[in-house]
Image (cartoon, rainbow, N blue to C red; front, side):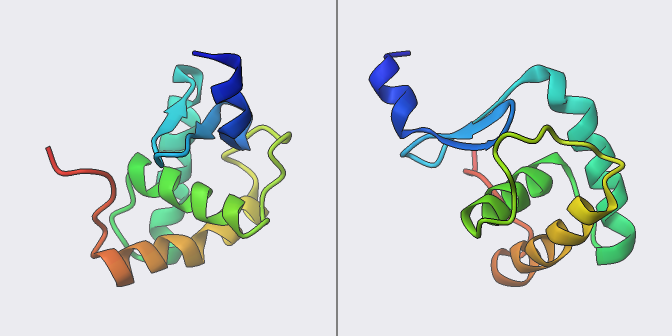
Length: 103
């Protein structure tokens, strides 16, 4: 990747960035954390949350200034889960839970 391109990427949290086209790049080491967050979000939202929903909620939270792009994700962080709950609900309410492109 060109270093100039890196400057346009929006850092969400360490290991997750979103480019100008809205494509997220996720470090493979975050898979378990994202899965755990999905599980933690199912109970308070009463929705079938998956990793893509968590990623979309993280992007929404970051764009609202609710996340520090320098603080690593921690699936046991109850404050993080609380911050993501309304975003997950929004994804389901507005988009019917559909995130990403249909293939």
